[in-house]
Length: 282
Image (cartoon, rainbow, N blue to C red):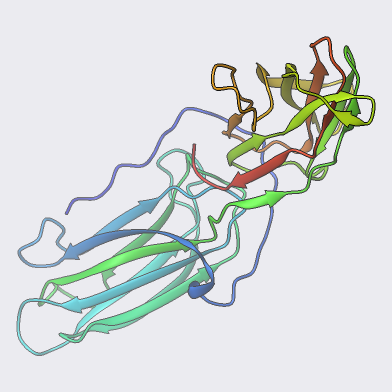
């Protein structure tokens, strides 16, 4: 297996450092696993590297399993490095930690944990396995290099707008003022026609737009996805149902909002939207 080329995705971003601790890789829900081999008879004589695009703000754990696969019974001296995300495209980040081990025919495991980084998807974390002894490697080494991280989707707190009369509008806060790191946000919302205090039979059309106040400045609002649709639970099959999937490619410190306008001729009551966020590389 050959050395991997660095990921040089073109987007830039503002960064904030969000550090998080982990107590063990078993607590991290997502992983990226890759195989490796180095030594005599393999394309990599003494060193091999694997790279992992991970959203920023997530703690990680490198889990490396290794064993000798050729040669005699003697062990092979190897070093296993976990490196922070690249500091620039193709420029490897600082070493978090190095473990010096002996590879034998029995498979063994090394785990190296790290706090989160403020560098994200376009500048990958790296695991490097290399010969740490003198002279050529006496035998080939094979294994898997896995990166664990907490990529679970989570529910976001959202305020409930309540009554929105015909022609009326609301601003709904999504989460807190710290904003979100890289990932994907999914939004649905339910509302219904109201005749006074009684639910009515009509379908009510809303205009909804996602946006956020950059650095919480109300005079600097970035407007994103716009939708004109009916309630997410609207039963009439021919009507467009509301749903937004927004990919967040860069840090977005600031208050996220859903701007809602009732563009129908009917009063309505809107429940609190359902918002989920998944820390993924878009």
